[in-house]
Length: 104
Image (cartoon, rainbow, N blue to C red; front, side, top):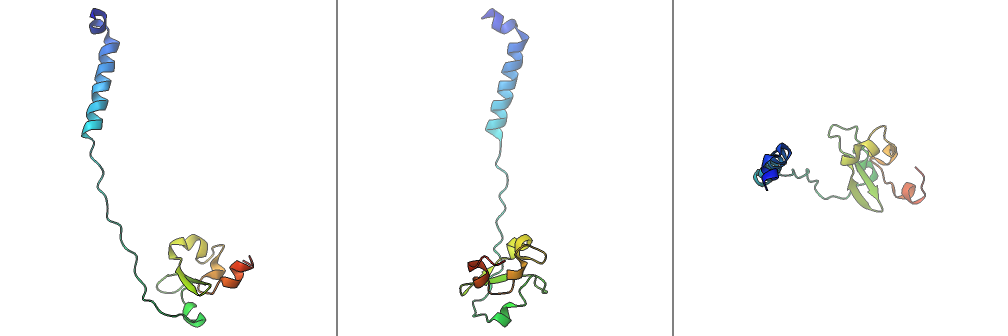
């Protein structure tokens, strides 16, 4: 027991252990930010002409895409569906046929 008290390495290990325990016990959780709800679009039936302005180039910048009669808001995937993206040809259009035939 005397060797444990006299060895400086043991004191360093005890200090490190005490620091780790103190920091773990007193750590506070980071503040959680409440997620913002995306803007809600009012349900309506879109014709192909109504869908055309939603290609990411309009004033709103929203990107909509139709597949098999359903409208999808793909604005969050602007890198894929926005102007210059690999699937930009689907933005503002009915993409049912292109997706079914793998004709991009």
